[in-house]
Image (cartoon, rainbow, N blue to C red; front, side, top):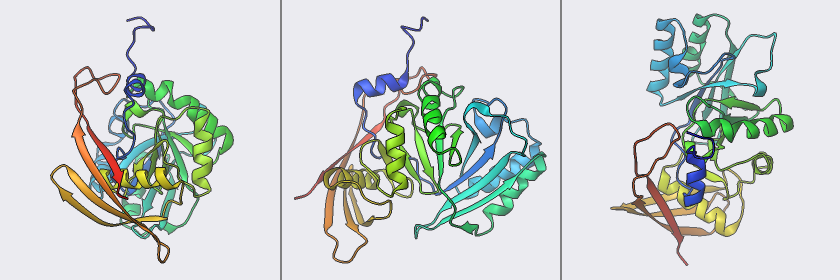
Length: 296
């Protein structure tokens, strides 16, 4: 296959104008493992670790529906210090909790298991994760690495490249943790503006895939409100009620401030025709798309 005829899932998705809203995976806990060697296609599962250590870490993560990501600094810069690991949590009250450690032996990663069983330290700076997992999907490298470079030049202490975070066709993908905010369809020009606005507590609807503590219809409703009324802080809006009727939902969105206006949002879903959704996968799959309408 020539370079000109090679299929790139992100090009196809942009040509189709695949909607971003409602595509953030659900979850509130992230496990980060710095790994400076080559990343296997299946990430943490493919690392040559001591089997008992890997099993215990995976079981503890699975119990909390935590996502395990391999991370590295952009460019795989040589470092004299030991690789790091982290457990990041987003609480229902919006509180951030982080635990960081280092590892030089496989068994050091058992600190992750202990951290998952502990409350964690409150606060800490946000972590900006850029999917650049080229062996998982070509678009993650082609589009992700330029974004990783641009963001690393701007915020070298906050930004890490990471393994697969979902939604290959929306590359370049960025997740800010433990805020749990997914952005997609980024490039080297747009990513700095999007992350700069996020760090200033202004989330915009464009490039927003969703908040990971919400389910897809709720994510879509919040994105619609942000699109109509402009950017707002990560915790400005709350979901008061969600009522489902078959493939439709009524989602009530309001602000946290007293006497904030109430926005009733109708969300409907439908399935797309089968299509190739990733660069590597040749099978055809349909996806669920959500559309929102704010009631007058």
